[in-house]
Image 1: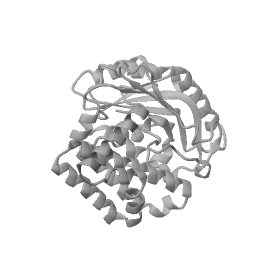
Image 2: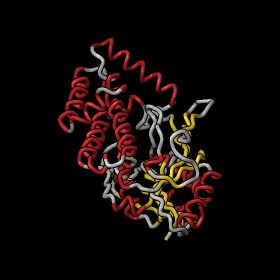
Image 3: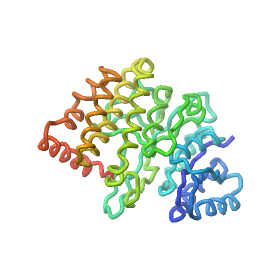
Image 4: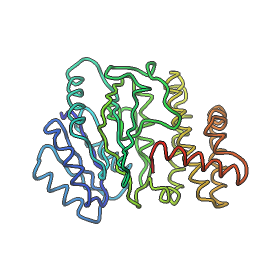
Length: 341
């Protein structure tokens, strides 16, 4: 068994896949690198197979029909032989020194009686053209360099949450929790870091800048114009997260800190959906925003009140054009601070 499986969901990634793989190779034989070629129409598969031939036993290519990012992640989880599991997108990379530190820590846990469900580390927004890189750290909310549970988790900043870039899960936990990401849907990374959380007992946070999250291509799913054009997929993910929360209410609400974190996360995703619909600035989009909040209300009245009358919920539901303008200004302020999109 490998220590860590790293899945690289890849679609038409020939221009940057090599950089991603090269950054992961220093893990050596402890690591399994799964290049999941999601029906690419370029040389992605050929590049992956070149590395597979050069590094047998480390790099493996999974060629599959196109099913989207979630389908590629599902395939990675299904084929993983590592004790732990990480997703690294094909246009991103990792920092070697932090990578090696994390592997050493995972080795420690693999040889101990303590079961770690989730390891968390920092990520860096590698925004094209930005002179200063924004680092997403969690030291204010999570105990450092020690095993902890949800009872030990502090308060996250408003609008801050743990992303796919931040986490390494225990592979068996991902399988046991039954998570299956939907096919042909963007933004499923939010489901990936949301659904397993009620099953997570022990966590460990390393304050190292491990993951380098590239932002800058016009065709990226997180590009604002692209998000607006794909808002229906954002809404699908949002509703799936609402459904999951309602379905697993008892388990989530059993721990105060887990409940607080997951409801904050759901509030953020619902806020993002709302602001994209406001930015679309069409009557149809505004109707969809109303429908989203009505969906939440019909699903669970407590969740609705909690999200609708919180700071962000109120901010997304101010009346009239003037109210929507204020909503957008608040979003732009957060955008400048957190340096996303």
